[in-house]
Length: 259
Length: 299
Image (tube, rainbow over all chains, first blue to last red; front, side, top):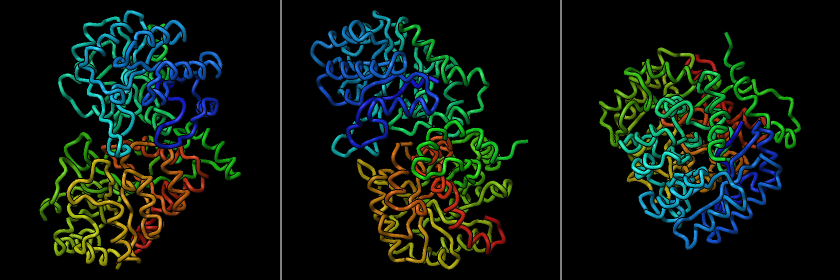
């Protein structure tokens, strides 16, 4: 099982289990995970992005080969973000990056974001965008962070066929069946995780609206209970081959394209 | 044909493996089988589901209940758009829909009566029609029609107490402020202190559960209900730590939410199996036992 959506280190507003990398890996192994794609909670608020990525890369390397796959943090509104991207790819050998635009103060219609996507596509690395991290209703009241509006991607994605894009925590937009969201779900080079996919029959709906090959297991652990994603797959009534594709096969394909 | 307990064992065994080990360290009870869980869900609706009739939607719920071993749910109002300040006729229609679904699936669902407490006289009549003289066993989900600390609820609570019927009250503490007339756990505590013999289920525990748990901690006749929020880790552990497992109740808030994400809060929590058993159904059955026995129903 490959979990495409975990984070290392400390959530800024609460202690969560597994906020020590070794502990997290031990917990994931017990749950049957064989590989986890890891971002860093530090990347949400820390401005020294290069330091965040160096610590992420080191922590992932220390947990052994091929278990934690680090996904670096890039903020295209920061000076010289291009060097951060270069280090992620060339120095830390990362297969991708994970963006949190709502915590970094830009929308997906921002030209700086398009420039970053283009640079990532040129390097053939994967781009994950976390559309949200938590329900806006439960956020710390002095730090409200609205979810990212994915609508601009409807125009951007078709112009970048080389891009390997994955949207995380897209649940907030699942009910927004606007033309732009529908266009994104139909785009062949956009994948989705299931952490915030909700409702009775939610996973079956997501697969029907996208493709059996573009839905990947992602738990948002340790912020969420891991078992939420696990039980969604186990209770979806999917054919065995689709279930295995969600658990692992689709993630392997995406990582292969990005490596 | 697999029975439901076998199904839940098969489905969640893998999910529980890690938690079981952690539980074993805490409780010394690693050998206890998860097949012993009897899952009762205190919070469900027929909305956000396909199907034109209550029976059709309940059939879908029953299919998904089977997949995760949910034995029974308490069904509340909701079929289409949310109706703030419903008229008596709208309230009656909602309750009739629930009773139709329950009638078709009597071994999978109990009904919970929807009321608009702003209309006290009609609420008492509707309680009598649906609970005293009908098949329903609970009140709620009381929603955003009036904040629940209002005295207009007092006669309704007294009627519920006379039959030992628990009350499910929607509560939130929204970061940007609650909606008009939307209740918070603080409102519910005010009501509960006026009615110490009544049993109140604090729907969503305020959503912001770190605040909601603290708000109800000292009011022993208020139970924390875990439905309808993201499966944020730590929720159930804190509730058990601060309230005791006997005061925590599982609910899902399907169909807008999934059984999976909400059950995961309990299944994935690092608490003993004995606590999970209480939260997933034991506590609810204990709360409902008097009214079920009075109606000749089994818990």
